[in-house]
Image 1 (cartoon, rainbow, N blue to C red):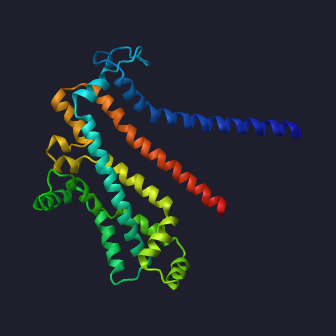
Image 2 (tube, helix red, strand yellow; image 1 turned 180 degrees about the vertical axis):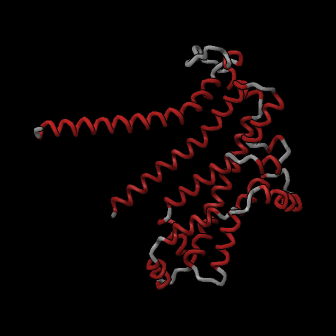
Image 3 (tube, rainbow, N blue to C red; image 1 turned 90 degrees about the horizontal axis):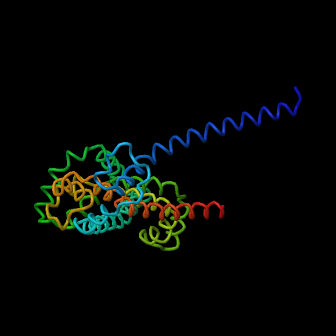
Length: 284
């Protein structure tokens, strides 16, 4: 067999492998996209057409009555405002507090530092169901039930962000803060002027995790608020069935509309994260 034939065989084998990889990736993409496409399709159909057989893959003409009913006949806009306000407030506060706590746990020597970190790790193992009753008692005792504070303050106690920030900051060389201390900078100045700019990718990751978690939170907002004006998206959408019956078209429209803010937030921060990563690689 000549060298040219060997080369042709290798090319065919490489093409088969590439085709197999693309086929597997295509199947995975189809599995991931199919549920969202079904919900989007249902949101553009009249209630009588959603369960029609055979199903229509493309609703022509599309029916926008579900979105009109959602925006004008429900409290969706209020739910969206409450959700964005709470999720943004918690994200900003936690990114600031968790980064400070992570810096203290990683770079500042104080008595009981390892014990504090161990207690944080143990707290992560406690199921949320075991904390709801004592947490509700504390919030109720402070008179915060049916307020925004009831939705913002309890999530700040989650130690996951501080643990993640500690791991990011531990990777920074100690020479940086030692040199800053020799220049007379305070610990807060070191944290603010040196550490924060170096852990921006970690802050972006933490912000995405916190915002997503708060945006999708259901159990605690359901318990902490009973007022219709303080309902968040998850609670409000779940209440649609109780108030308006099983209107699957409106439910689907609410699901599609709920994905828009969190999708925008994620992709905006994703671009920033990739830009910073590429900039760091080019500097090296």
